[in-house]
Length: 234
Image (cartoon, rainbow, N blue to C red; front, side):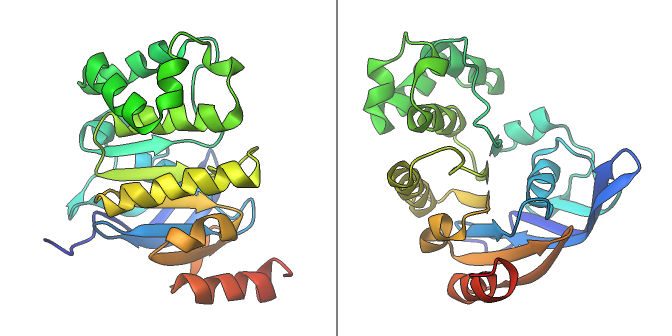
């Protein structure tokens, strides 16, 4: 099995209009790894994930996928190459049913039958709610639906942004248990999370992001200690 990085950001700069928000980001995601991207709001975590998913183009630096430079590749093409993203706020369509939400993911070339098989096997509650409007489900069930849409496309890389947002701690724990299972099955995962304690138990490494830069990478426990003492005031 290769140990070469699946995703590698080298000196990435990016922004919105004239405002640069990423100031030379370096980041590596290896095969089967779970990298926790941590730090306070406004540090650049979401923008980094947007670069990795093809939503936000970089202005300089290199974005490499499995060793190949893919700067400027569209989000749709990256999805077909196995990079799947779950944005902050889950990214589901509240006015569509569970089944219709899954159908939208067929644009990547996977059949609805395959998507439903994967979704209902991992989350039986979604099978029970297949004709229910997604917006009427609980936050945890909506997050399960978002994960199912991603998993049905058989991703190599999963980009997760603030999975814990708006969820009760018990549900957050369940969701991250599932993410841990995915990693054990070989999916490489980059997860941006403001609440470090939610993700660190399953992380293989962590990166601390402040003011548009990765200022530290290392062992999850060491990064958590730095977060608590230096940056987030305990």
